[in-house]
Amino acid sequence: MSLFKQLDAVRMARADVIEARRAMAEPAGALLARGRKHPLGTVSAAAGLGFVLGQLNVHPLRVPGLGALLSGSAAELVMQAARLIREFSEGGFDPS
Image (cartoon, rainbow, N blue to C red; front, side):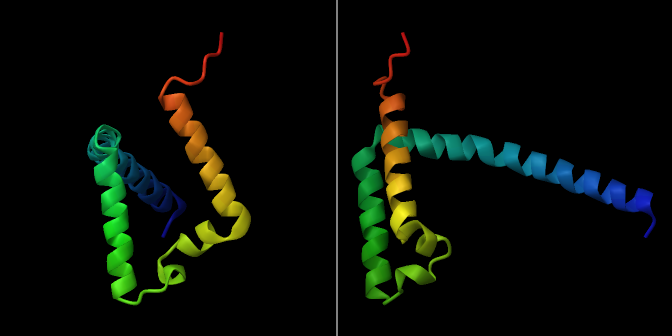
């Protein structure tokens, strides 16, 4: 393959990624808004998923990405970030 064909392939792949991101932005935003509107439903879904994984005897470390999340400092960091995001989204941060 020539260099120009490879560059064209990369440009086309980038355009595909941008289009896929645009296509996913609206449903993802709607899902996040629904989660904010119905927090009990979100927690119930998470609890239900945990129950199902437990019944299927799926070890949490076999779920991709969950092992790193459960490791000591990463879990604390995620917890602090979630707390900060929640406080900022509720208007608890007053920059003035």
